[in-house]
Length: 198
Ligand code: ZN
Image (cartoon, rainbow, N blue to C red; front, side, top):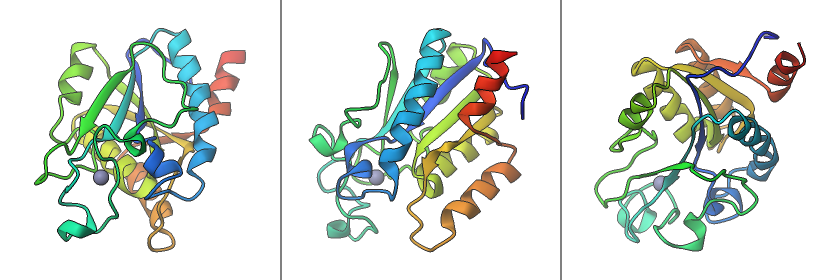
């Protein structure tokens, strides 16, 4: 994995690095550790003037995925609340494309493509390959990556910049395997740094 260079038709997709998933109501174990790693990718993509996408849960206050509504999760990602804001230490560059998902009561979306215009916006920019990291490996990263593969994008999984909920132990590992089976290529930031140094 040493010949990995960023190319003209690449985009970076940062999945759901929101306060509720980092420190809040649905904090993912180890989530804070991905922020400085993602910041290195963000800096690289900004330096190369390549598109950066940040997805976020942007739910109504009584969203169908919340326990009070019979769903599986505690309330999280309520539109406009501090918990739904991106983690303050995440260094999103100016011009970041923000994709809000699951914005109505009846719809949930683990994938950044589901019910959004993400695919058409990427196509309009001529993007062919997505570098995907964020939260959580076994839910929104998994489903965003699988949808991206179905839609024909090449996918590079930022294996050093994802963390899993692991509701069942091993869920995260199984998700990484499923993404790789679907054609995603796992890398760490050092793989890119090595390519840079060549
Ligand atoms: Zn949600």
